[in-house]
Image (spheres, helix red, strand yellow):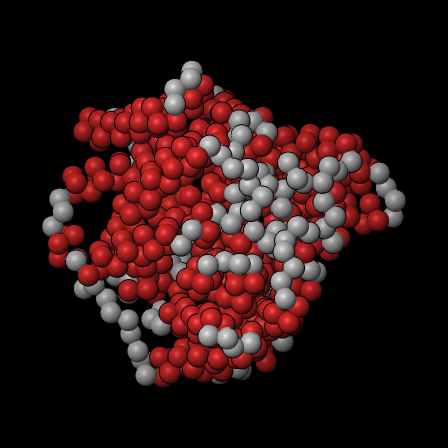
Length: 211
Length: 211
Length: 211
């Protein structure tokens, strides 16, 4: 491929964060499909779209084609595994309390925000735009899922969701700027996003509205 | 262009399958637009999106930019011709029995599944991912059409639609693996997709649901 | 970047038209978000999507990756500035009469149609396809905005909207063909789109329907 080879440590970090986020979001996509009474194929499509839509958008935008989700067979396998396991173990998955789903979703959001921001920086993208790309990576899959289900994307309705991803990505970018290693910056940004998202749910924080 | 030059025979096969599918799907897009009471421009937009959306997604994902639908003027011309003919000959098109539409759609699905899988393999994509790309090529245009009409995509609701495309693409990939020529593998995969789709409609086959 | 370097004058023209259109469409995206009762983040997302969606689609399709909206930090800054100003100055923005909004929107449409067609030609795209790309640039952002709000895109419902963009792009392409400078062709195409759009609103022009 003609893409520049980013630092190997960053690549390993992006890979690990991406794959963990992929699995968590695939489960969420499958639950949304089951909730919408879709069949097994629909479950698989939504697992795939939710888990990989954000990363595909990021890779197309930074010019890393084919996107990792296509170049590396492990991504679709992990997405389909998440969807298939949810389908097979539905009675078990449905006993997961909603609070745990929110925690898992916040973890996926944090992982993707970090992976997106780190990868954008590694491709030489402007720091301000790298924050945007981290946010798009984090919320892109869920947005695609909601569009496919003909809903207004929850990212547009839920307070402090995309903003938490944006905060995490900004911490990563700022951390790298002041000399943190990719790992330290990623850890700080991921924790920042995760904690901000959970505290905002717990405290019912809202963003200002125009009216 | 900087894309690798795939085998000329494969290219000719992909081209023929792509163009035939483009024409069939353009007619379907136009019918959906007329059904939604859109004007002539809306008909053209939906013909274009339905006919070329899947191929554009495939080409963006495998890094074949500009996509064929943009690089080769014959694709948009065929798509608009399908839309324009449907508009002009509407009384005739409306007398086509629904069974014939299902058969034509199954043919378009099979042509695109084959074209997508063959082109992905020619670009050196992993075989498992090539099956996915064949499926995306086949169902992408119809999904875009439904999203633009603010419907839940029929691919998520119709049983054995995307699965038929996936089956056809899998036959192509498996056929190439065991040494079939692109043409033989394409014929087998196309027939497989076409027959599976029609038998599933005729026999009311369903995929399992979670509940 | 590996993209060919188009003529510097064309680049300056595309840049100016793109940035002016970006600001106008960002305001419209923000108004749509406020109308949909979204919070500040939702306003920013819709400003960004409306303002930059068309240009991102054009750049991905012609292979100009990363798209300008990502490569050049001024684009997202202008989009967010348009969204933020609309949010802060809402009482003022809401006193803008609807007629002025239609005029501003027609101006944005014309600017993007010209920028899209000129850039496609500069990248060596076939003239017929360059007209399509001008149209996609002009209506892509509004379409993405409507899809995110789960509406049928207004481009499919409003008569003489995409057609005005297509007309302006066609004038640009024809003008360049017969030897006009980028600036003269752009001026003629932009004026053509702008006037056609406004006259069609004023005269209630409609495109033919199938029934």
